[in-house]
Length: 99
Picture: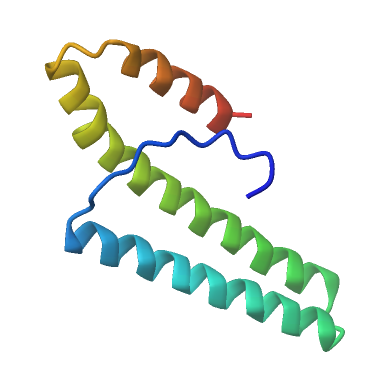
């Protein structure tokens, strides 16, 4: 990704978490393809806008699930280990998400 300020950290996810997140992304991917087809077939503007709104809602749901998992695992584990810098990292992440 260009302009990605991604850290070099990694995370092993449980199979359940991985499948849930992948399923959400697959549905979003399908929705985006559907909007592209709508545009290619000259669908009415408001119909496309409603579908784009649904994509935004799906992306927000993905973010909520991922953030919830992150706080319960990565953040909680780091705090227990005394890595308080993780709190600042979380605050910065939340600020970016709320733009």
